[in-house]
Length: 104
Image (tube, rainbow, N blue to C red; front, side):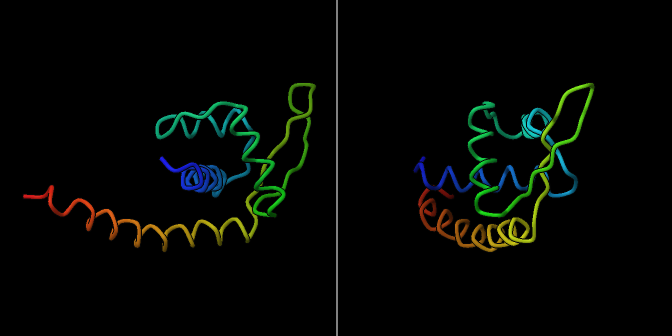
């Protein structure tokens, strides 16, 4: 798969994982696991990129005696999910075109 396409898909997956509630790294990976496997190093790279793009914000809170980072989706992050939904319609159309000979 094209690396840029994959990067964009993973970014949207992470945003979707925190769309309904703030979350932290381990929980994000756990929530995504039924759909996609992701290493911690990949996740934290994505989280930093999304934070730099202002698609999420970060706060630290104490949990069991240590600090944990919680991630919150911003308006820009919600907008990116909506843009992805619109893009997906075009991607599906392209897929149908490419695979039209394969269909009975």
